[in-house]
Every structure is written in structure tokens, then in C-alpha cells.
Length: 500
Image 1 (cartoon, helix red, strand yellow):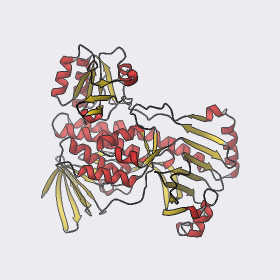
Image 2 (cartoon, helix red, strand yellow):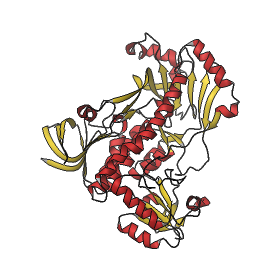
Image 3 (cartoon, helix red, strand yellow):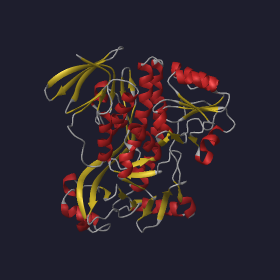
Image 4 (cartoon, one colour):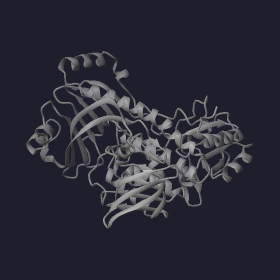
């Protein structure tokens, strides 16, 4: 029987990112997927700047950057075109240095992640292999897998279901879903622009027309997506026809100027798994949660799952943390996912109003506010509420990434630190820093001349503190005296409880 530390079922972007993270941390991984190649059509369309940073750690951000374009605004407009509400980018430079919102090409990301997988020893990707069964115990999991050459078993210490909304891992574990009360059918149309045209617009639009709510968003250069809500009585077979689609596209673009890549009817759901961990079995991405697409946070949330879970699994498997640390995975991630899902449901209900009177009342209410209150800066990503030092206003926020001057030129801090926790300290913190390095962390003095703190962002983060400790998923763990931070970090690894 083959053995591995971690078996990942599902090799979409979340499963692939998780496999890369674990492999880079020295964990043996087997990742399986029933499909034999990357799905050629884009599905997810949006990445925020935090997710781009996490994908950089997984080796996919550079390829994505070359096949993406920033979103200049996101607007909700009434039938007559009046602005109901809208969001615009904030500061030019985000904490991560990546654009606040990027519209991207998912197959490009998946190919990049799988290429990175192939470069990591100890990680194997098996395509055309599907999980069929498993039995779990306190010591691990025995999984049954169907492959091209027949069935076989794999013994793993942990099984992670990254296998989508219909997750077989979740079904076998009998994990129920919390339904948040949103379920609407939509026709999704992905199109390529002809004659070398790169974009129709840089603005994402929600047309809140009760006769037919419509989403219109740019994708990667040369591509555009429309989503049309189905009316009562319309069938999937009816709405995917050429004439029907031409009639739908007519108000937005000349149908002859685009080539349809994909036409499919989806139900937009809002569900969250009640258990993300059941002993040695865990869920991530769509297997753990699904949300309406109105915030573009589905893949972003799954990537955060992978980043949160990977370093904890590695710490437990390598004896640097107690298994109780794995209980913090859902405790830390679910509140974030639930808040985003609730906001996406709210936006979806604004868009999906099909009752004329209700839509008119909605428009009057939203238009009664001054435009300055309706068109606001895009909210930044939500941080962590637990798993960080209590009482510190910056704990749980994204740590701003500086650049380092190295012998090989300028590099991001993440390129040098990898997936290790980071300690940046002022004079006086060297003793704690040495101990931190001995435990596998990355430590650097603020006075190090190779640290390029443009705009004094790192210094501003430290403020009057001696040091700042940053988690491997790049949230600020806390600030204070270096030795106290190190002690709090060790206690968190040992117990999984948030430090006081």
C-alpha cells in the first residue's frame, strides 16, 4: 500500500495551491483529480490583492499577472442606468503591492500551479484518479482510489477534500451544510472579443433591472463575461440556444463581435459546511463553502483556506505544534467566510429583485443617499479575529510586504522568507530572533540595510513596539517585546488558543 503524509482529493486551484504549500514545507503529498487535464474555460474571474500575494507564495501570481487586468470600479445600476451603489479602488499601493482587484484567466493560474507542483520533490499529482471511498481512524486515513490501471489504496495521515461543491469527501464524512437562503439560476456566458480587442470596459457592472438582472464583467484581456438571471419558467435548454443568447447580448454588445466560449446554467448558492474538520479529514474551498459570485470571493476564500491550513498541518506533522492547532482552522476561517458570504447574499438580493414594486422601492431608497455615500472605496479584505494577539488593533490585519536588496537583485520579502513565520525587530530583539530562527522562523532586524521599507510601512506597523511577528499566512500575529511575542507564538502552536 502506498503511503503519504497528506492526500488531497481535487486538484483545482485550491488543491494545487495547498499541495504546493505543503510540498515547500517538506510534507509528502499525493494530489488526485478525476479529470486528466485543466478545465479549459475560466470559472473564477476575480482575485483580490491578498490572494495574489498568497498565490505568489504558491508560484502562480506571475503567470496570472500577465493574463489579468485591474478592475477600475464595480457598479450597481438601476434599469435607467442610475448608480445605486458602487466601489472604486482605494490607495494606489496596497499592503501587498498587487492591484486591489484583478480580473484573471483561471486556466492560466491552474497551469502555473501544476507546473510548480512538478518542481517540488515529495509531491505527486495523479490525473484521471478519483477517490471512491475512505475509512478514517485516530491514526490516519485509508483511501480507495480508482485509477486508469485499476483500483488501489493509499494510506495517509490526513485527507483534505478540495473536490468542489459536490465533494465526495464531505459526503462520505456525512458533513451537513448550513444553507444561508440563497439559490438562484443564472446563465453564464463567457466570450472572446474579436478583431484583437482587449476589453469592452474596465468596470464591473450589475444591471439591477427587475425584468432581467444582468452581470457584466471584464475578464482577462480579450475576454468578457455576462451572467443573466433566468426568469420563472425558462429552462436551461431554452436559454443556451444561439438566438436566445443573441437577444440577451444585443443590448450590451454586437453578438457578431464576440465568440462564445462557454454557455452554462448555474445555481448560485450560499452554503457553509458545519464541520471543516472531522478528525483526520478536512475540507477546503468549495467543499467547505460556496457563495454567490457578486463579490468575486469564491476562489479568494479557498486560497485563504489553503494558506491557513498548510502551515498548521506541516507544524503538526513535523512535531512543532499540537494537533489541537488544527481545530483553529475552521475557528479562524469560518467567520471570515461567513461575513463575506452574508455580504455577497446581500448584494445578490439587491441585484436579483424581480418584483417591479420592490425594485422601485429599492431604487428610491438607495438613490435617496448622496452619491458620495453610494460610490465608496472598495473595502479591504477582512482580517482574522482569532489566532492572533488580543488587544492589538493591527493583529489579524495583512502585513505590508517590503522588498529586500539581495545579491540577486530586489526580491519580495516572501521570496526570501518563504512560508516561514516572520519576526521583524528593532535593536534589543536579537536574542529572541536567534531562538525564532532555530525554530524555523525568519527573522530580520529593522536596521538591516537590505530591508527596503518604502514609505516606512514596516516601521509604521511596528510603531513604538520592539518587534512584530507575522504568521505564515501573512497576517500580523502581534506586536510587542520580541521575547514575549515568541512565547505567545509557541503557546499558540501548543494549544491553538489566541494569546492574551
